[in-house]
Image (tube, rainbow over all chains, first blue to last red):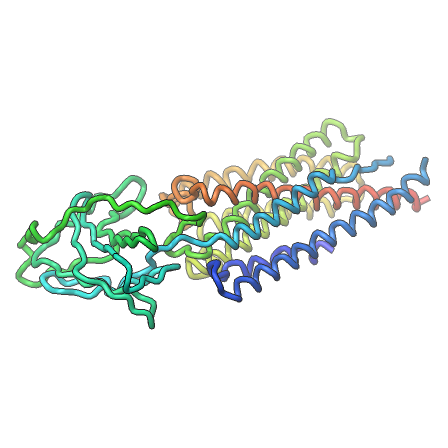
Length: 65
Length: 369
């Protein structure tokens, strides 16, 4: 799981160093879109993980009460 | 013992998302200011007319512009350009100078922490593009037989100040760095985030030693250490990518790169140590002690040793640091929020990991009977 996170976080940086300056270059917008998608995916993943953990915690910790 | 970790506050999650989105969009959308990258030829023979080709970033000088250019040789004197021409095909500006015969008195005094004099300073100003300069742009080659002769002072023009009108928000153009300066918002915050997260880890390790019966400190210490190391690895990776683009290779055996790698290896040993214990209490206490030791090695490795040696890295060995003059107000607008964004992201992921550890231990305890 954390190896996947590592890959997700590391990949944009390889693209970032090659980004051209702002101004009508289409490559620039593609890089930005890719980064936005990666980070959106990361946050969706984190929220989904938290939901799963919450459900499991409710089950495991409430059984003890 | 049952230990349930509370969820990471929603307001901090929202702040993380917004700040990270701001960092990525502003960091990549705000354009660089114009700047001069290189000139050709670098060696100019005195006593004749020369054509100096100038290659610039983010500019396109047109024929209609009232362009001014000069080669400043000291604070008060310069060689002013005769004519100029924009070469649209190769995107270069040709400047035509008539250099006087003899030795040109270039001021070679080094300024402050710089290791070389900025003169001859090539300066270009246009109403549309603004002001750009290139330090130590050229060398003057004195013809044979003229070495003892001083150039005629009448050939120089006065070097009055050229000021540029305030432009829209833009990042500074720096030679060699160019567009890679945007990596400042990824590489440096990784290290800031790492230090803050590892500080939280060592704080919790101290709590483990003081209150070993409370498992929450053990979960926090190990989770924060994991994310701290992850951020450190990302910091090394982003630094290597930056080094490839500016220093020429991914790993230059620079002292900062070496000591960062050593620091990370010391922290990786923390996880090896934890894995070697089956008993949870022993694991918690001994790894807490090691964590304190590992954190204490970070300070000399990352902040002391690199400054004692020559280094290519900004802030070390005589190189100007980003904070001294490169980090102007336009970059601070994105840099400070980016530190907060990456640090919060690290704490958020660590928090999830912490909850996973607590849940895992709870399930193992429950199902072991």
